[in-house]
Image (cartoon, rainbow, N blue to C red; front, side):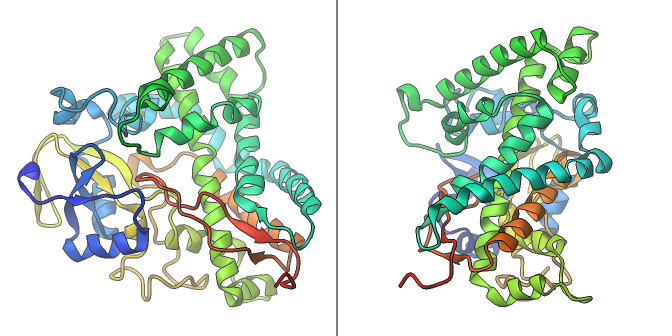
Amino acid sequence: MLTHRPLFPLDPHADPMEEARQLQALGPLVPVELPGGVAAWAATDYATAKEVLGHPAMTKDPEHWAALRDGQIPDDWELIALVRGAAMLHAGGDNHRRLRQLVSSAFHRAPVEALRPRVEEIAGELLDGLATAGPVEPVDLRELYAYPLPVRVICEVLGVPDSAVSELRHRFDRLVTPQESATGEADIRVAVAAIYACLAALIETKRANPGDDLTTELIQARDNGDRLNDQELIESLFLLLIAGHETTINAVTNTARLLLQNPKMLAAVRDGGEDAPTWADVVDEGLRRSAPVRHAIMSYATKDIDIAGVRISEGDPVIASLFAAGVDPSQHENPEDFDVSRPTRRDHLAFGHGAHFCLGSRLAKLETEVALSALFARYPDLTLAGDPSRLASIALQSFSELPVYLGPDDHS
């Protein structure tokens, strides 16, 4: 039984690489403790995480989580917003397919590629704005570039103002940053209620002013039939907003830092020769080496099953440790190295696997590719300005800022 085993505590402040090594030393499927003393299994290597994510007897529907169903998980649990609500993210079977089909066409290859010129335009505008800092003044690349680019793109896709994200930013951040003894405005339930209230008001505004956008399509699906109810409409918009920018922010931040730490790799891709690695290669290697999602929370066993030689009981929750899977030494040679020519660079689970593979993965990769190529073309002398602090989160993996110098390294 899961609760009868010693539990490895997952710490949002831990170094993800050190945590990955510790977890993998304990085995491919490890009993872990989440904030609040909540027990779960964690898949710690590539093969096991992939099996968990794609196993036919695993579901994202929290109705199958015994502890939640039996009332053992309180409504103010720190990670409750990551396991309940959010429409298709936490639906299974026919419900998941129905909700996913309502928005999937917007993220097919052709419509996403059609966004490239607009993404390039937004990147150029943001890079123009960075220039006001001067060559030797530290600039927070995460705050001023990695953050606003995907926010503006997803808001344009949805047909909503940028303020739909910026006004809720601290609420979104609260959902993925566990806090001890949170009360008042810091209570996770307050953040969730505020997000839902804002999105409900946004939907009513959009209903009165429809456009050629994804939010209007979702509203019409709600108003013209039984394909979407009120709660699903709000939760779908919530998921598209937060998933449409959070992963990309971390991908751009993490990969930019890796390139700056590995100038030979950066020089190789900028060489542009016939056999030179491409920016698409850079994006994949960045996603492998420094996955934007630390732990995918979570899936549930619909019956007793065996994975990696471990019996998972019906109703047990299972986490896929995506960062650890990306640096699995049984899958990648010298996995801690950042090597854009690595043959296994595409063997990552940064966007998940199986039925719940990230719907917006194409858009996220395009945005990251455009963001990085434009950044280093515009500022070829970019250098790091100090060591950034890590984002304290169980779910996400990145840095809270990325200070850089735009000019040549003459600021000593």
